[in-house]
Length: 64
Image (cartoon, rainbow, N blue to C red; front, side, top):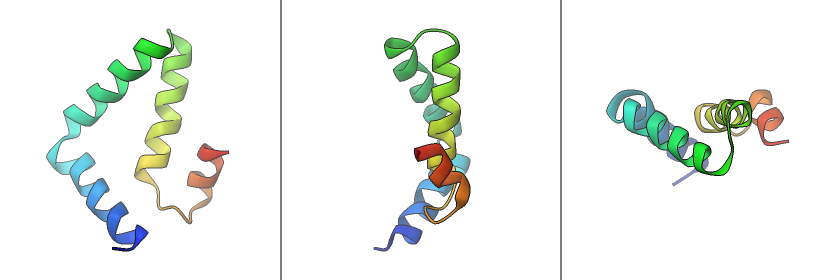
């Protein structure tokens, strides 16, 4: 399986199958580690890395 195929599967699961579960899992995990504004900022970065292809500029910026 290539990274593009894995990304397509993850995107489909995240956007169509388990939309609420993915979002809630991120929120709960981040609130345990970070509080308030930091949790929101970190969630945005995680969402970017999970929803963008690995060869995109937005993915690279979120990871950096």
